[in-house]
Image (cartoon, rainbow, N blue to C red):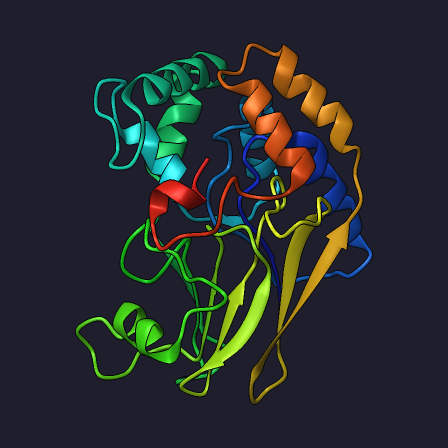
Length: 256
């Protein structure tokens, strides 16, 4: 069983199309799964939603997709009121009511079960909420606190997620953790688009990341000139492929 995973497209149609072309070289796949954050902070929100829906993929909701359940005066924690309202209003204008409803009603998670007891769980940030990130350098104690929840042991063998925009794989309690990272806005210093392929070999899950060059200056130009609120900021971040400041254990630092 082979699963292709894309996350955090963030309205970057050029990156998405490049990823989809590259995926054809490595297919076919039993499923394509999009792990949330389709449009926020990017210049082509409507086009990205339409392209994703045409894939016949499984799509789950990210924290920025859940913003479309809010009104402009209902600012999420950690967001600046004026900036959030401006961004939401612009996105709503570009998307239209039907696409907004689609984003607002996406499911929280998706589960792939190749064999009993070997579930792959796909979420956006973590298995419990949209915001708390799984950081590459988290120690085992912090991972225990975040991933165990109220249960003694999770009921999955592998967990795939996005949100932090940094690709990594690691083991935790004999389980595989895979940050798919970001197709549209990587944040590990490498501006190439990222996606992942996960494979079930009949015994365990494996994961590989794939990176693809695309024309980032064209996207940055569109960010600056499309009317996108804070377009200059998003363009600079795209070109640098870095957060402004260190990754922190807060949603405010890792979202668009």
